[in-house]
Image (cartoon, rainbow, N blue to C red; front, side, top):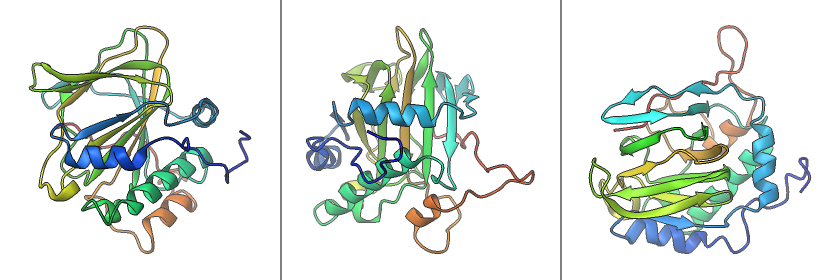
Length: 242
């Protein structure tokens, strides 16, 4: 896959997104796991786009959760990240196609993309909930490495199930409003990798963000907003753990 081939699909044709979305909306756990949803070439392309990104350390404690890793957030534009932009577009298209059957998905337009990087032996993030302001759906794509991702019964980490989040996998998490459920967010934890590093991308719709004129997808594709110094306005997000 050429780095300039922006018309090439990122998601695998057999990714099973429709079934995964249905499972995340209806299953009691509020989550679904899709292995091999992204081809290796697409993952490598995304990783190369993040090579020069300025990651910041996660705070050691956020709410009741402990965490160890790094984060880089893009809110204003994906112009400089064509593979990530394409993946976002394909996820949104799939969500909107399922919108007639699953309440909330027709309105899902992720306006925040967070890359998180975990080195070998790091803690990861202990059991937590994504914040309520991330409506309808959270999609986590692993683009490098592997680590255990656990759905938990409680804050002590008693497990519902554990998935091996390997390169190319997608995890779909229910947000408030998905499928008509007021708040069905799943409690979950992610371990650090045993070897190498793990890089994930999180796609979220932050309903606390100021409304933009025009279509949200367009605002993520236009020129980046600039900070006071003239540099792109990117950086650590307000923490999403509850």
